[in-house]
Length: 310
Image (cartoon, rainbow, N blue to C red; front, side, top):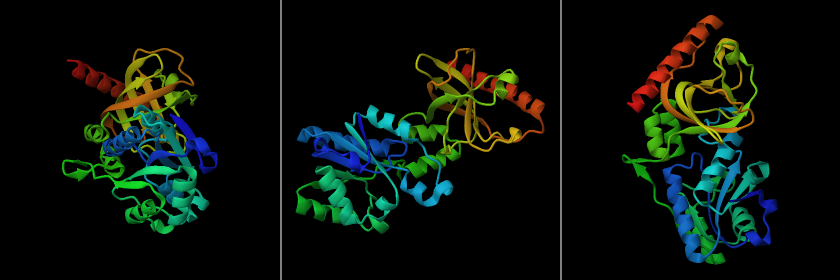
């Protein structure tokens, strides 16, 4: 899948496509319904399929640190879109210029001049342009004038409720991993590269792989049973997601202790798949109390995996 970063990197070869646009946070079942429509129409018209997303996501631009946690960071989203068989991913930098763009400018600069869209698929609640002034009807009018077609996707329901990133975020924050997996169409997972940390886990006899969270918060917080997949291995383990209050942590971090594992994996890209909630993150009175709890967590997680194998 070709990655195009910004309007300024669009070239003549990118003109003529079937496209859709949105945050696609989580690439969940509702998103996959949209992507299926895009791919089917692209095949029918013999054109490339294009997904347009934003970095940062608009809500992050406006709300900053108060924005809701992401389900997927940029790299995760890219890999999930690639797995869906999309041809091109156009990532627009959401900045003051894009925020101020009118709906008509959006159509002219992006859909017509930039991409020469032939068919445009939008979600059932899609709004665009400064002050969200553009909507489906405006797109249809523009399509009639400029010779492209527009389709509005139907809401994807599960248990009579709309499948959305907001709903998935909510069930994850309630630690309902099973419900999240149903709505996502796969178990919830976080991917990132292993970085060097404080080596506290190693000092306590439980070395951990620290996965970069960058500036994005995770919708989960606490201790979990996890399955960790690397380039050449799969391992089970126990994972803590949070700020490590006992050691005065500030930034969110994901630390996973892998069972019966001693390979050097610094710098490797890992996918941490969450299987079972164990307990909330909490602050302990001292390091010894933390160490005692960690070993209790390990026993609980090993017992969980023993039950799933029986």
